[in-house]
Image 1 (cartoon, rainbow over the protein chains, first blue to last red):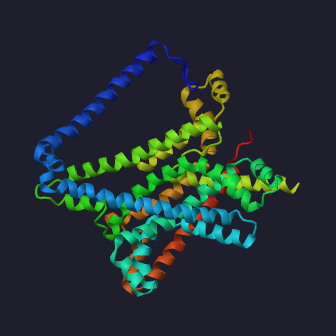
Image 2 (cartoon, chains in turn cyan, red):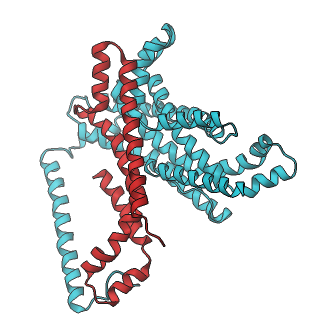
Amino acid sequence: MSASILTEELGPRGRARVRNATIVSGVLVAAFAGFILYRLYTEGQFEPRLWSQFVDFETGWPTFLLGGLWDTVRAAVIVMILASVLGLVLALVRLSKTRALRFISGLIIDVFRGPPVLLFIFFSFFALPQILPGALGNQIARNALYALIIGLTAYHMAVLAEVFRAGILSLDRGQREAALGVGMTEGKAMRYVILPQALRRMIPTIVAQLATITKDTSLGYIIGLSSDLTGRGRAFAQGSPINDLQTWVGVGVLYFIIVWGLSRIARRLEVQQRRKLGAGAIAVTGEADLGALAEEADDEVATARGTGAK
Amino acid sequence: MYTGAYVAEAVRSGVNAVPPGQAEAARAIGLPFSGVIGRIVLPQAIRTVIPPLGNLWIANLKNTSVFLVIGINELTRVGRQLGQANADYVSAFLVVGFIYVVLVYGSAQLFKLIERRVEIAR
């Protein structure tokens, strides 16, 4: 094993010190974990009847809880599709030649990326019914799932627009130039040469974004959504023996399976792509990294314009 | 605790970005571990992680809206209360949204400024 470049190779006394510190901290962590388990045990949280609620299908409760997955998955998929389409349009307009269109699209993207997603959910649930004509507004006010889908779409389309833009700009400039060189128009070059390659590169990022959207659907709880996994969990927790801990552990496991599965898929796709394309593929990023991604794109635009003008 | 995990990862990547020669040279002139870390590696690492830290700050700024769930009077909750009191959610949320946009892009500019000032020429 190679030593860290930050420290010298340890002598016998240093090694003993590291060993002792490892043992002491290991014992402390084990003791803390043991204490928590002991308290849970003495409080009766491990009683089988509290946990068997998840498999007692005769009561109908497990089916009820699992049924919540339908609305969670449905909302996530619908948001994903709507946000991708709108995001792609925004990204293309932002890359267009017309300065005014570029500005408007950039403004929309920036404004919708600024506030927290919760505000969009509130806006569509409380404010949209006040703006939209009667029947449509009433639909939203009465149906928290619609409000959730609209709110999440508004936010994630802007986030995805930046992902798409970064993906399109990450493509080698020669691709576009070659397409124009063989006589394609700008539109054809985009449709037949640039987008097919760029979209393929973005697949891992998009799958990772689907994981984020799935988690965000749980925010529907704030506007009283009761039919998704979190909402059904709330009803499940009101069962007769007090079972809040067990309920949320169970709901957490279900979310974990979906989100972890999606991020595993995203990572595998990314590795596959790396192997096929060399470097190039856009790294899977969390929300925190998207700003950096967009900035990179900005820089690339700047350099592309700079060299193009020469 | 949640953000701390992200900050830890950002700082780690910053430390990795410092050329190994820097730490080796520091050790070669006999600096102790605290000196290598505190005087040579971290000052350079922190300057390279300003952009990711800025992004984390912005993400955090938005995550505070979730505080309303436990009844803290933050911006989004106040917006909802105002909307309820005046029966006008539209303008209440538009104003709140505007404040968020100003905060987010204001701090983005600030971080860009800091980044430019402490940039390392390599």
